[in-house]
Image (cartoon, rainbow, N blue to C red; front, side, top):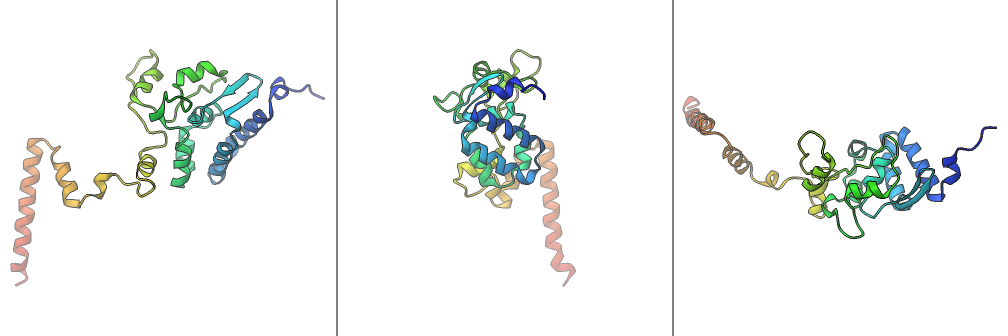
Length: 213
């Protein structure tokens, strides 16, 4: 009979639940992924648990920090959770805009320092502000990444509009206005080419009744 693993001996009840969650997530298909994520979120076992590496504590808005440490990537959630309401529910517990808010979400470097490090699974944010992007670079070569919503701009728009739409405000404008706004970004040369093309189209349309007369 093999000796028990030290990590198993040191897990508390929440730690065993987290371990089961991580094991399932490693093998689950997209069909069950959303259910597992919501079940773990509701259980709150992820907020405080113990394993062989030590004790972990996460705040209400640090669900993405917890997920990345358990091997769940942002891409897994983005691609695996189809329901927009479920995504919005998850995003409410990883809102990067509230980073630094007391009792909700700490900065990623603070969380890394406060929790045991898991080999090859550093704590990462799903979303980040410009300031957090600079912190993530942490002195390495390269340019800091731009800010990014935790679960994408579509979910963020759904949340901001109270569940009314996922479309950008510009998408709701009349088509002619959308085209006009696009045209203002053209160079002078491209704008002249566009204007000439529109004039030609206008002349063509004016001749149509004559050709059928």
